[in-house]
Image (cartoon, rainbow, N blue to C red):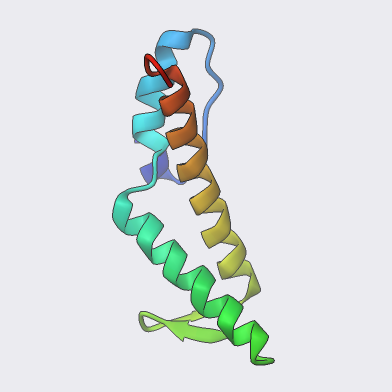
Length: 89
């Protein structure tokens, strides 16, 4: 329920809680792909001197692009952490 309720994370008191928490808060592949489209389109718009752009029917401005970057960072951090916990990782 965590991510669906608008929560962004939780405190953990035992390493066994990491996996379940990551599963709850990990952005889906579709969310990450959408965030990448948002960031790319926004950066292109800024390079052309625009402060906003439309992506997938929605207006994207600085706050939206910041949230998209944060989502990409969360996904990357979870993925990196999981790789480091795998044997040979």
